Every structure is written in C-alpha cells, then in structure tokens.
Image 1 (cartoon, rainbow, N blue to C red):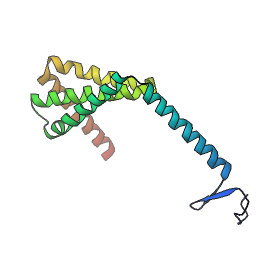
Image 2 (tube, rainbow, N blue to C red):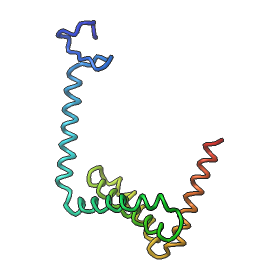
Image 3 (cartoon, rainbow, N blue to C red):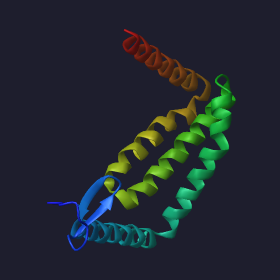
Length: 144
C-alpha cells in the first residue's frame, strides 16, 4: 500500500495513479514479446501476400474517391468492384497476422463482388438500393 513516500517503496507514479514497478516491468515484457511476434509474422508472411496487400491498398485508394463521389451509373459499379476486391486483399493479408477470423470478411467481400462482374448495372443498383434501405431502417430505429 502506498504511504505517501516514494523513496524505496517500489511504486511508480503514472498520472495520479501509483503502480508497483514490477507491474510496469511485466507490461513492458509483454509488449516486447507481442512486438516480436508481429515482426516475426510480418517477416514470415510470403512476398505474395505483401504484394496482394499493396495491390489491395492501391485499389482502395484509387477507387474509393470515385465510389463516394459517384453514386449512380455503370462506372460506379466498377469502382465498387475494385473497392470490394481491394478490401478482400487487405483482409486476406491481415489474416496472416491476426488469424483466420479475418478470412471471413475477405471471402464475403469477394463473394459479394463476384456478381458485379456479370451484371454490373443491375447488380450495382441492387446493392445501392439494399444499402439505402439498411441505412433508412437504422435511421428510423435510432430516431425513435
């Protein structure tokens, strides 16, 4: 227990809290181990996955502005397709670091993007209509 004297008591002041120094050492060791784990996972991930993540980032950056700025027409469906594929690539890359749970959004994004290849205009309008309906229902629910 802290007695108001920090001299030799084994406590460290962090803001207005006093913490035992041993807890700070344990937290630092855990942080170093986690950092080493992520660096090792990064280095062990194949070059193909890093290339996929870079390609996904390019697709997201290149098409997100067009997708947000243009909400109608067939050109928007191509931007939506590229954003979904880019997101799938990024989630697949994240699955290499954080586990198989990130494969689920990657597969869902690519599965949703697949119909856009075949019937761009009608599928795109269907996706936009579904998204607007979901947003409207959330607004009505929150507005109550």
